[in-house]
Image (cartoon, rainbow, N blue to C red; front, side):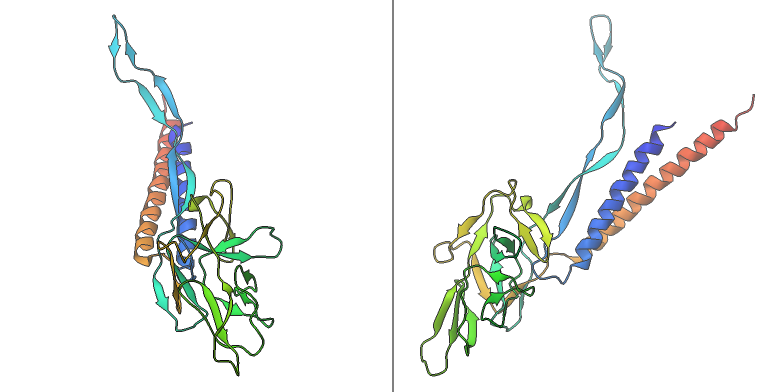
Length: 261
């Protein structure tokens, strides 16, 4: 059977996965803190028909080897900074830098990590995510509090009726990683640390000036629709070309099978 049938089929599978990934990127174009992903490919093994030979009698510097297609090697997450959007909501906060919020989620022994700073206050006065998961570092806010806000250093403060001074409710904790691409996505805008990401390193906003918080802002998705559309067109054409190879190989086999003496 012709190698091209199997080789082209690997190309179709690879581009199908590429389109699936592009669809996920574009569907999350308005997801707060979402980081786009990119499929990376590698060529498959080569079948060697004739090796190069260099002896006193024979000098053939180039051999014959045929590639057997392509495979998806990895789907990498790109942690470039997303667009900062002003929301005028004092509970919204965006990270300017490569750090992550620490989030405690039920069922996990260690904190998970997120770029989504659209926080809320639950009925018990805890600073939480939209799913009700507690933000690490923030303490419980007293009943009757008002004018709750988060400053550039992550300090949560609020006012109480009858008191002139603002009350403090802890400071939001951040973490960073040696290899953020090694983080595992667990859904709901959350990441989990893995051996590939390295251990989380605490990020002190009072001393580390490479990272800062921007109150009343959210970091939006870093997906660029125009770029994704160009990539989608490229993937679609690559898929179509591989299908044409299969059609051409089929026609060649049909011609060979119809040969007459």
